[in-house]
Amino acid sequence: MIPKFDFKIPDSVENYTEPSKTYKMHVGKDYIKGYNDLIESVKQSVFKILNTERYSHYIYSKNYGVELENLIGQPIAYVCPEIERRIKEALVQDDRIVSVDSFSFDVKRKILCITFTVHCIFGDFEASKEVNI
Image (cartoon, rainbow, N blue to C red):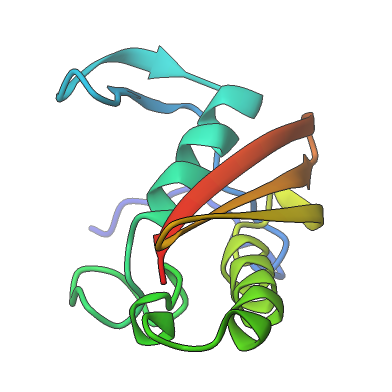
């Protein structure tokens, strides 16, 4: 006897969106406790993506992370537009992020401070990243 299941396979799995609830990282305190959801989980995702070098960790897909290491030592006139493109490309891989814009750059010694606005399905927020140049 074979049991019968009333299970219907969806026609398409392309429109499936992962839930946004995730464990909450307490950055700077080095522990994970509790949960976050909606815009807070997107902020955490942005932080994780921008702090993961693409192609460096086998645990992540080739679409996860951002390429920043090979910009060290390059002229600032090349770095600014290139880093803007790379950050946009890295962040829009997350299906909750609609767009990234309003980039501003500030150079302090050998550190480039980048601030930008992330537009996601839960609202907009400002994010930043510091890069050694």
